[in-house]
Length: 431
Image: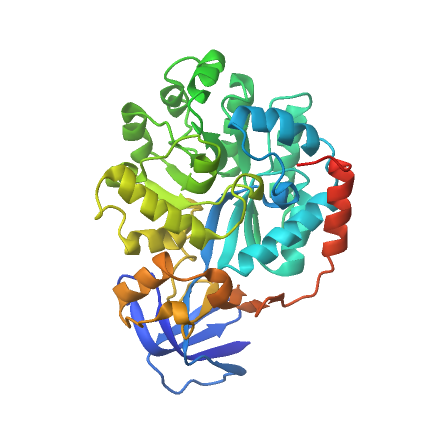
């Protein structure tokens, strides 16, 4: 199948060809085969005329807990430790496959409607999320949750078996550790060994809250980053870490030169008063920094555009420098830096050979006025002025249009199941 998208302006995230007006994109199956000026193309099966629209790469949400849409608005105004122990973990113990499926579908629709085409998920009942992914057509990197409790070794082995058995163009399976404070040395070392054997990256919560370092050191001793680096973690084994608020200078030097990327989650960090990661400093040292929403229970939405806007404004303020975190870098965090964070050089850029994961924006909405029709003008509009819900009109993943004008391409009757799950999990308790 060859599809021509004609007439849109294109913000590519490709430094060699960053902004093209009134352009053509040709998609063959799941890949882009042409990007450039309008011309005649052979063997086109379908055409979409998109004058008055902008096309960007799909955004990549590098840290979330997708089915926690079920917990949105539950457990507000609480510190992280208390929130987890009183409002999250006891109720997650009640979850079923059906709950996670319906929560995942709701989260996927929310992401597709706000420009996200790929996400990294750490949660439970991962087969339910995988089924929701295949039903809806989004792309995902699934890192099933691993915490030190009875049966943890079997759980790791299950994840390895899932990775070895998966056959999907949309889903990759990788390993996780919930955190160093919830997983002791035996668990970390076992997961690290399995990651070496399978080529998985490890997804982990890292130094999110101010109390976390003390809890980690009780389990792993001081200099735990250096300890595990010497065992191959952050070096031979790639790590995608969420938060990283409290990384010290010595750790920063090691991680910035290692096999490591950060998923910055500023809204969750603000809401739980965990702190603010100085990403301008991290990026200045060469660290790959991407953007994540965290779960909807602590954000409370999955809108990456809102997340990156917070990251930019907050970062400038905390850095004391209005030139910190320029809009182009923030756009790259949504796109090409997200692709680096998940080790995929075929995502995050609109160029021949890349996957056709695209977002179509209506640039005739009032919030785009005045229309600064330049590369830098488009970065400024997207990062600081546009509302994704009003402007995202179509979303493509792997060469397929999977969302248009408020609707998934495939009808999934999820609302009743979602509401039934919420009633069963919380049993009429008040948030």
